[in-house]
Length: 72
Image (cartoon, rainbow, N blue to C red; front, side, top):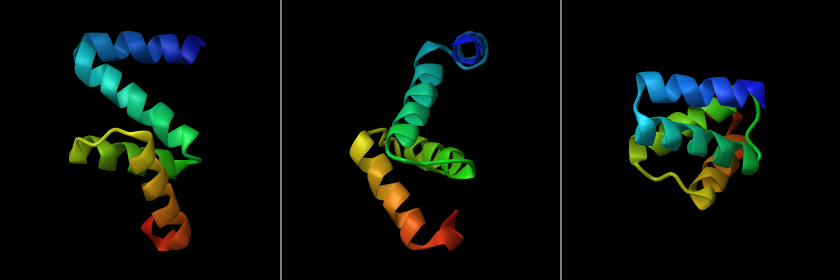
């Protein structure tokens, strides 16, 4: 709710519409894929760096972290 609204406003003010939207979208995909805690940030950073912000990629990254916990 309020936190998402604040994040959206911050993204518009600091990163621009598209970059901010993609970061928020990547975060939602990471959460939808089952990421929790710090894992969310790692997955978001990876997807953005790869330019591959998709649910299937988020699921693959979550599985990789769960299979090898030392990656988180």
